[in-house]
Length: 192
Image 1 (cartoon, rainbow, N blue to C red):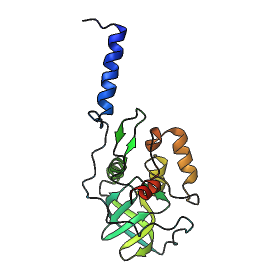
Image 2 (cartoon, rainbow, N blue to C red):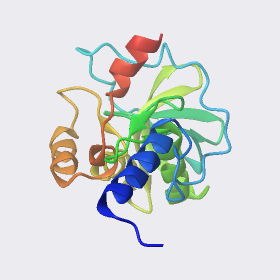
Image 3 (tube, one colour):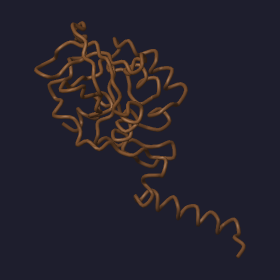
Image 4 (cartoon, rainbow, N blue to C red):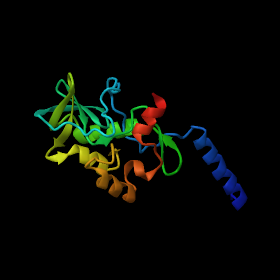
């Protein structure tokens, strides 16, 4: 059966309508979600915008479990990657096509794929009992910087050492920047 141009437009509109109604929300390109239940309550882990993280005072090394796109569990310690902010596990973003996707889960899964429970070394400072903040390295590469460079996270404030790297990722349209998203800090403020 041959379609005429008007019939093709109607079929195209029907496919778009199905996608917008949620029937085709998540594509095959979506990374496998992390098998964690997410990080513990993080409300006290965030520093005020005008306060910089404390200077690292110790080194933690061990196998890394991923709690979220900016939080690792290294042995028994929780390490918040300083200077960056990744989408929250429940956060939704939109692809370039306009279709929603669970960007928080996806960014967590992408970090998990990178680490594969390998060892990391983190230069950290204590935030509270069992919770640290700092820079973690995986085979020598700075994970904090890697997350921002790939567009999987953003700089957490204007004083972050990753602001220029975020700008580069945005201009290249990498990761989150390929679509539409709300900064994680704004999303948390709206949803707390």
